[in-house]
Image 1: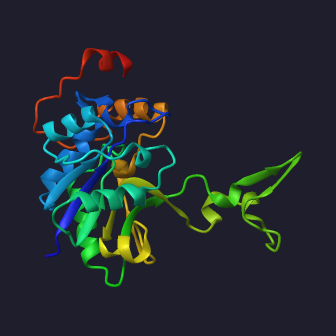
Image 2 (image 1 turned 60 degrees about the vertical axis):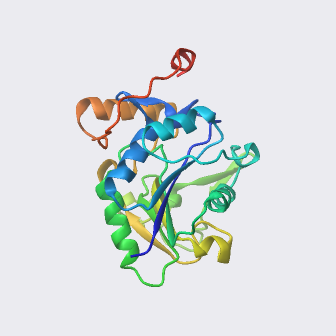
Image 3 (image 1 turned 30 degrees about the vertical axis):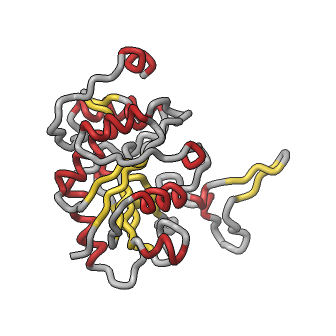
Length: 253
């Protein structure tokens, strides 16, 4: 069986949702659910958190992940490409792994079974470089526009169509999927052969229900809390006592 490394990215500088990776949800910081779902899946040879924060490092260790290094600040900006922190993480480990999975803290409803299903699909799909979580696109690109001065044009050229996509019903449009943050899995060789996290041949992993839900904006966080409170979405089980946040951080969150 190929060896599998779990990578949980958790930089400290989120602007849209301050403290995003460790914001509390149902008594635990978001990152706890990424770590615990990975641990419970039983698939990973190692689970490593890549962060530039000493606090996040402590939280990661508390919930059972390893955090053997701090990510350099220049690799933890809002515009830092993922491939840079991935290469840094791989270079810091004393062992090489056949494949790696990226498990972002911002997808709290990803279950151990989600990861197992994705890993099975990855192994059973020959010839791919990677697998990435996707879901049906609600805002179809055929109905998107680019504003140019006082006018606008369709984002996708539809001038030769009898009925433009922007004038059609959603159900009549080509099916389009959008990536979500639930997970990504790739062969480690892809990082070095293509200098990318996904390579050239990418398989779709279709998430179900709330698996692909991502907290990217404040309203997403409030919706996540509502989904938990109403039982419409289930969080992975956490087998550790809640991490006690410093009081000043509690007020900031």
